Amino acid sequence: MPKDNTLNIDESMIDTVLADDINFQGTMKFTKSLMIKGRFEGQIDATGHLIIGPNAVVAASIKAGVVTNYGQINGNVEGTERVELFNNAKLTGDIKTPELIIESGCVFNGNCTMGEKKHIGSTIGQTQTAQAQQQPQQQHKK
Figure (cartoon, one colour):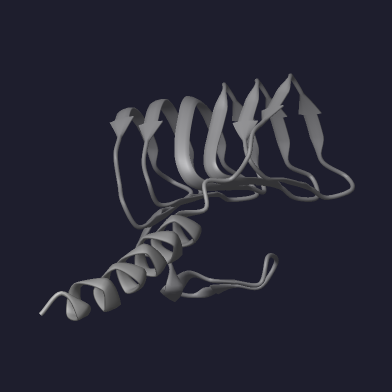
């Protein structure tokens, strides 16, 4: 896939790209990365990275790991990791995310609810520490 020089996005690093001549309606589910360059209407329920291109128009309820918007979104957006709104992006709808990045020049009309990030690594570290503390005690019982 070609590199989009206007955004410095290397499309070869994106798993799926819906080209600017595609108009799609329905429900999309994905786990990796998806870039929409055309039009989409419906619902997106994903764990991967969703990128809305600068000429894209999306009318949808969106839930994804990361939502990066350069285009236009009409609908509520939930980014379980973060939501990014870049220069010239438009979002009309509510945002729910633990991390929000807003660049100067974008338009956001709606409400934003921010919660804490879930730190998976910290619970793993606590589990490993607890296991390490139990092992010496078990060895002394021999």
